[in-house]
Length: 114
Length: 117
Image (cartoon, rainbow over all chains, first blue to last red; front, side, top):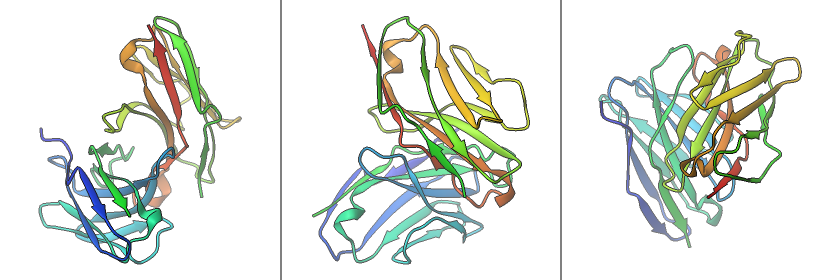
């Protein structure tokens, strides 16, 4: 069984740039959720993708967008980067409609915006 | 909307001691789940234990157990016989079932647990 993987591990960007983060879900999982974890904070839910469509969203602006592909992998795109976007971005996969929504997390991508 | 509060930013205990991490939550859901996640310095979030709100029996996983007080909306984690490898950030999280799985987990701010040799 392959776990959740994310790339890249670290990334440095400047304000105003755009970034794409990638996630491969655990085998057998069809749903991907993205979280932002600022330093010293708990993760915050950005959005979830199921069947290649956004299926739920937290309190994040539209410049945070995503994609899910037929193989259930996913991308998180952030446009017009701001300094406050510096954070650890976590991807989690799960099986849609599983009763307890157990989510399996990847190791994260550390994004630094200068 | 759901909220999760962890009031202990940091705790430190000696190896082999028992430690309890506190968590309170608020939710309007009738059917919900509560979780404790561990995040070691490697950053990967690992599920420690989960509790279904409709089950009165407290969940147990080896050295980890919870004290779930539904009326008080309290969900504490007890770690028995603590080990050096238990050193990590611990996050309490909730999830409401009525969203059909479309809502994410709601996390607390975490407790940094340090196990001293």
